[in-house]
Length: 214
Image (cartoon, rainbow, N blue to C red; front, side, top):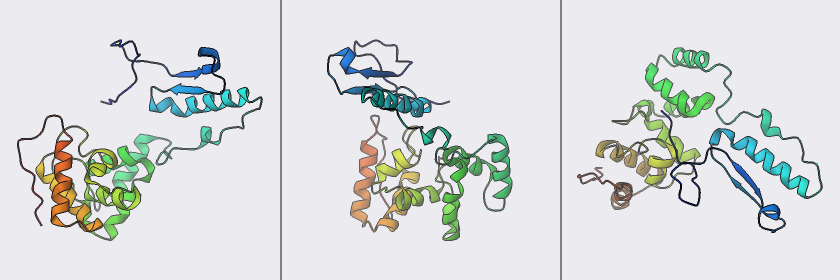
């Protein structure tokens, strides 16, 4: 199941918007030189962006260049047949990872999943899955080293899906924080503060006290 947040009308209608809108404010409001875009789905955003740029060039009396993005795969999107790619990845990584771990990595990182696995050459223990999740420790390291994660909330909510489906539990949060602490040089007090920020981010807070153990 896939879910997300999409726009709704300003009037407060319960029905979400189903189609994008490109607004030329010269037509809408008499404001020349202003164009607004209301997107709906990530999967159509490239096409919406192209149409928006085409409109801007038309308003400038110019012809927009041919977009390179139309034929450029997204990062990790160099996959022609997903099932075939998935099966090949499972077979290729069978010596070090379970099929389920490989499936999860391919679903999240696509053809770039091996960029996560390269950390296992440095520390094979990073192949271990954080409890109550499908996130391996190497994903946390990748988030810090390659995706500029500096806070625990960055990794829990934005670099991995560790906390996206609800409170993941004390143990995985603690392990995640310990990994980041070693990478970023956090002391114990700072690490505990980072844990508390994550706990406080949940509307329904767990009835537990998270303590980072050395």
